Amino acid sequence: MVVVDWPCGAASVAEARGVLVELVERRKPFDRVEFTHQVVDALERHGVELVAMAGFMTILEKPMFDAFAGRVLNTHPSLLPSFRGAHAVADALAAGVKVTGCTVHVATLEVDEGPIVAQEAVPVLPGDTTEALHERIKAAEHRLYPQAIRELISR
Image (cartoon, rainbow, N blue to C red; front, side, top):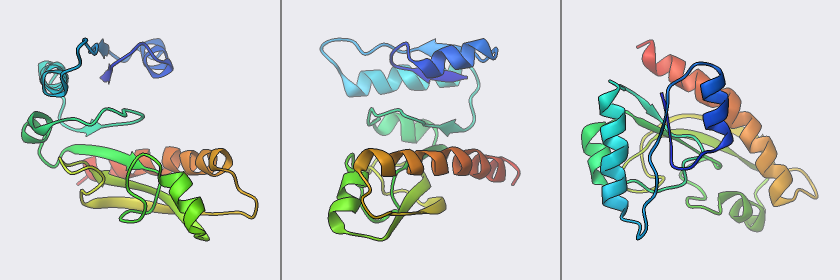
């Protein structure tokens, strides 16, 4: 099942493959707690056991982590605990690091703080731009995330 907050490309790809898609719209004025409850309701209605967030940039509230404690995964475009937050790739470039990467972690109420599940290093190349580096990190995430999910569900 895929839950989206706007009709994005991921929803189209999922639907084309026969995957159930549910749109949980952001209402105005936006209430993050109410939105979180709506997401939880959608997931629970369909018996979801493991949540894998991908490109979901809305910070969810406590009801999500109560309902799915230890079962919400997220990716982040850095080697956590370095470069937390929304500007991780730009922050890594600004810091002059030679290596950054991606992390799959258990999402918690504290943003980018949960236990690390898997990581993959990505070299920073001379002359890298934020966009070029981010594309290589996304390619690593696309390899790492499914692998980490498979390992978790096989336990």
